[in-house]
Length: 144
Image (cartoon, rainbow, N blue to C red):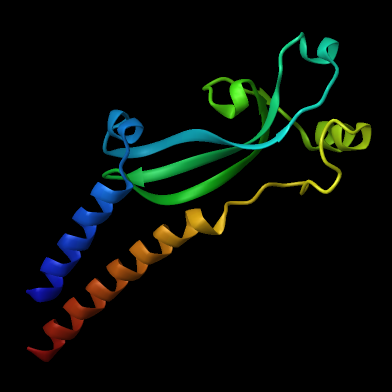
């Protein structure tokens, strides 16, 4: 009984702490894409149709009941407004190498982006809480 209450409390707390206004509009489950700023894209204005573009990391978030379950890297993209937009341009590995060679992007930029540790930790903690809850239930069932 105690672990069930504890698990419910942790799940409720996680929902409250991890949900933001933007997440509340998305619904209770599914997936969505978002972008994180990586670097300024210093290309000539004629190459970008006069738009100021930025290199962004496109990430797909899989969630249930507003709680992130898994993040998947979708690679680099180019976007306006410092990646705070819903529109983006695909950016291939060949284009990335060319931009790094031309000096439009930092040369030490990784060839493929990765999900930050800060994004992975809540998912791992939630998984451990669920695992320990299931193990506690089986132990009680076997003890009875």
